[in-house]
Length: 425
Image (tube, rainbow, N blue to C red):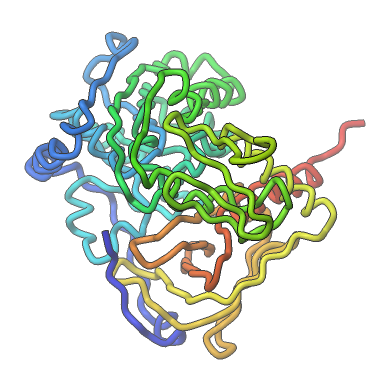
């Protein structure tokens, strides 16, 4: 899938009128039906099935649907489960580019990932209370890189308290294994299923504290797709299953080199020390020679997280990369404004470019996470920063691991948050 882009000088982009906020629309039933029909073509090959739990607690009232974010099939899954019940969809703002009215008639509610957005809460409340329509939200905000849950925003319980509607969770199994983000959009032959559960009634939400609600959500969004694959003996035999694996496993545990890894075919190789691992049909890694440091991919990714944290604590972490810059200021296009340089350190992000006209700083506590993605709209791997006025899509040149930048942003936020917390005496 591609996105509409347009080359335009930075100063002209900044002079463009900003789009006005629009209240969300109740989904058009005809369009919802078209989505449901089209989803059949992707779901039938996966032999999709789902189970339900506690759904008899619900009446006809609108609900908040919280779903884990695994792959591009997610929306088709939820369309199958809830059709003909209509629901609004919290959607990243770039999804509106070039097709705003279509997205609005589908009931989509735009938001900027990892940017404070109070209007989103108001829009969700409007859809639930005024339009009497359920709302689908992916609380992880981004696709899982390593098949485990990405961090949820703290105090999600505050949102649940404010909305005060039942919460239904949809947790998929097999969706990640079928089409993991790192694997270059190559689909595997994997059966997909989902567990649909009434997690909280409105009465539950009223009776519990924010902290208790956050803990319940954390437990619901605790999963490991590679463990699921191994325990259920799900064999993935495709010859391309390791393609792109270096996007998450970017650091060699044998020699410590970064940006020298390559996933190709069924193997992952470090071109610095020559060590090779094979990705078997159950999703486990095994070294061709010597010890296998991390057979389980999420364990390798967790080790990389620890390594990044050590760099941050020692003050040695740095990202410096030249980038092509795209900007989002309205829903008409992604405006390609030229080249620049992205720097990331313990002080946050600094983006400069466009012949000195662009200078943007983003402090570490701006957000708990980072919007980074692989092969974004078929343009390239991306790191996205910005605020309510503009989003900057930075496409690194060379072999910059955007996964490391995401890990660094998450760990830096934790470190800074702890240091700013009041000390009890």
